[in-house]
Image 1 (cartoon, one colour):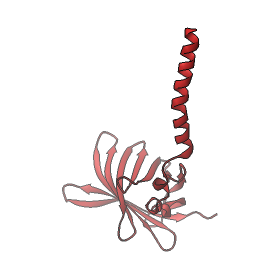
Image 2 (cartoon, rainbow, N blue to C red):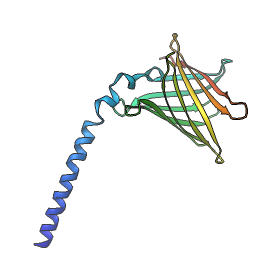
Image 3 (cartoon, rainbow, N blue to C red):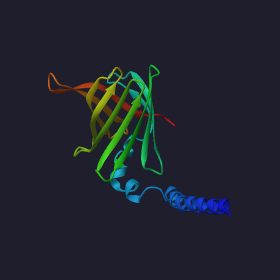
Image 4 (tube, helix red, strand yellow):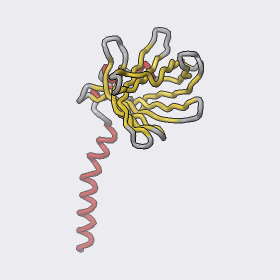
Length: 176
C-alpha cells in the first residue's frame, strides 16, 4: 500500500509540473516578443549572401535565417579561408534593445543596441579573444537600396580614443 501511495503521489507531482511546462512549450513566447514591429527591424539581413570586401574580393558566405517561431535570427558564417562562426540575434522587449551573441573558435562577442535614425543597426559590446584579451567592439549593418547589406566592425583604440575599422563587408544576395 505504501508503494502504491508513493507512486500515486509521484504521478500527481509529475502531472502538476508537466502540464504547465507542456502548455508553455506549445504556446511559445508572448506575441510581443516576436510579432512587435521592433522585432522585425533586422529582417533586412535575412538571406543567403556572398560577402566581399571594399575591393570586391570574396571574403566569405553567410546564411541568415529566422528561427524559433520568428524570435531568433541565426547567422552561419564561413570565411573564404574556411573559418566559421555563428551569431544569435534577438530583440529584447524589456530592454528595448537588440542583442547579438557571436561565437567562433577564436572570439566571443556580446553586443547590444538598436536601429539608429539613419536606419542602421548599431550594436556595441565586448569581444573576448583567444588568449584572454578583451576588446570593445561595434558593428553597424546598413540596408542598401539595391538589396545589399553593408556590415562594418570597428574596435575601440584606447590610445587614440577612436574607432578603428576591423571589417567592412558587402553582403550581396546569392542568385536563386
